[in-house]
Structures are given as C-alpha cells and as structure tokens.
Image (cartoon, rainbow, N blue to C red):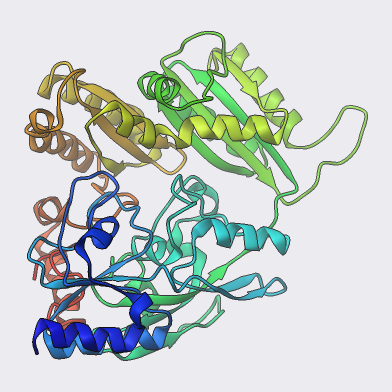
Length: 478
C-alpha cells in the first residue's frame, strides 16, 4: 500500500478533522515538552471513538505501519515521541475527552482516555467526591497517559499511584480487537489481571481508550504547612511522627532544597518566600480528612493538630521555622512553589532529570551520597533535588553550571546519570519511580534489571504484539 493510499484510508476513518498530515501542524505532536526529541510521523491521527481507534490500528496492521499512542504530550522520557524514521503514526487521543458516567453512590467515574486530569478532578468535586491523582501537569495531561505511565503525583503516600486509582479499562489490542474490561469492581479474581498488565505499559501492548476510576469522599478539613528543616533526615523523622499526630491523615509530604526554591522565585512571577529566613531544606506537608472540624471554643480539626505537632517539633529542634496556610489562597501559593520547580528549571536552562525512588528511611543517606556524586562528576553543576519524600520518590535533578549551553552540558549526562543510578540501585531503589522508561531510559533498564526480568518483559511484548507495532523502541527492546 502506498503512503498516499494509506493516508486516504486513515482520512476515511477519522475524517479531515482527525488527520494531521502537514509537518508544520504536526510539530506539537512530534516534539516533547523538554525539546529533547524531535521525531517525524507519516501522520498524526486523532480518532473520536474507540471504534475509530480500532479501525486505525487495523489499517496500520495492513500497511505495516507502527503506532505511537499519545495523550497530553507532557511526558519526560520520550514515551509518546515518534522516532526520526518517519514510518510511524502518532495516535493522539485528545479528541476522546468525555466523562461518560459518574456514580457517586458507587464512588466511580467512567471516562475516555483523552480526558484531561483536571477535568476529572473538577467533575469529581462537583459530585462531592475526590479523584486524588494530582500532578503539576494536571491542566494538560490526560488520564490515558497517566494510566499508561502509572503516574504518581503528590498524594501517593495516602491514595496510591495510578494503578491503585483504576478499577477497569477498555483497550484496543495490536490486532485491532477491543478488550472491554470496564468493570467497576474492587474484587475480580478471574484469572490474570489484564488491567494491571496495561497500566504502566506505556502503550507498548495496546491503547487504553476508556477507564473506570475510583473516587473518594471529598475532603472537609485540610491543613497545609511550609516547614524549614535542617536536613532530609529531619524531614523523614517529621513525616514519621506526623502519621500518628494527624491520625493517619497525611496526604502529601514534599521535600525541596534551597536551590530549587531560588529558581522558582527567580523565574515564576508572583512567587514569594513564605519564611523570613533562608534555609537549606523545606517540607511542604498537607493533612486532609473527610471529617469536618468540630466547633468548639478551642477549635478542633487538622490545623490546630498540625500547629501543635509542629510546635512540639520546633521545641526539639526538628523544625526550624514553619508557616501554616490560613486560607485556600495561601495553600495554593505554597503548592505553587513546589509545582513550579520543573517550569523554573526549564526557564533557567538545561537540566538532567532523575526520577528515582528509594525506601523512605534510606532517603537521607542517598541524598547525601547523591549530592556528593554530582559535584564530583561535574564540579560547578547545581543539584536540584525535590519530590515526594512521603513515598520515597525524588526528582534528583542536575542543573547545568551557569552559562553553559545544552550541548556542552549534555555531554556529561551519561556520566552524571550513571553515578546517580548506581547509587539508587545500591540503595535497593528504582531508576524510574513515576515517569516511566520511554526512550530515555531503555538502555538503563537493560543495564540495571536482571536478565530474567527482561526476558519476561520481552516474552509478554512478543506474545501480545508479535509484529512490534505498538510504540516500538520504548520500555524494552525485542
């Protein structure tokens, strides 16, 4: 089949609105957020339904064309990027963006894969429910991409990552068949769990088209604090004590170093330092509960409990200074300091990202060794560690020395990343906590995981996608 005939067949399936063939119009689909990848595609295909997705997959099978599924294109590892060969299509699910059903009584919601995460959050809130997945990119990332990368975010320690937030899936298989697993069941022990197979597979085994999501009661009480601590060890100890002090209501606990805060203050308009003094380390902690505060003369609820907890920690020297938000606006301003780290780094210049995880108790020792390794590998580099101390996931990033351009800095990327990943594995951790493998870490996965584990991954890929047509060259090479 000629390229022209193939494109005509795609146009017949999705219509003129669903096919983007002009390279100029394709640029936003073939370039990643960090400008690390610039691929080419035969076409960008934007189906409007599951049936259209299935028809596109069958057309690609007949033409021998590979498929790169893509959500909001907010990924950081190149998982949604086509290669430079030009022999793939990008299959964007952004048109499939509807909320199909909300079941407040059963605490579930059914959505299409292109539904933007913030839309899901707001829809849940409108029904007095909570969908707890929360990411910095939530205004543009889509739930299909979140599930395909098993996204984490800031509330994993309380609610779990994306895998824990989904009950059922609908998936288009590499053959073009549709698997309907849209079951709103918390218990379903009927053989292999196909849902978990596709969550985190990054589109290499099939295309997630719809999902049944879990909901929770909406919070009635909330307390958010910005806390200065002397060290990551103090942050971990503070978190450990907070679980009991909050009656197990810690929903987020984020750790940030001063270097990252300075970048946010420099590059993000409206950002302000919450504390008068400068400190090396900060914790952003949130407690929330579905139980409303009880009225009383002394006040009861999470804010007074948090204030008492931080006051006691300050007396022992565990906390150096703290500010508790007194309004939703103040809480949002504190969260903006954390959420704008990636944007501030991008505006500052080139950086190397390390999305790693270790056991929470091992974080302080890892951070100490990791900072030393970065400085030893490239003197003058600027480490920017931040992330989810509550679940052991840090974005252990490295900013270029001041004045360096991207080519000069990226020449050191392999040595810096190798040094950090060696320490991660030595600490029993993971080289990818929530961003996935994509193109960026495919060699690292092959290096750090056992041959047995890689062989099992390849066997699954070959069994489900024998023609290697679904997002080839991502996650694992076959």
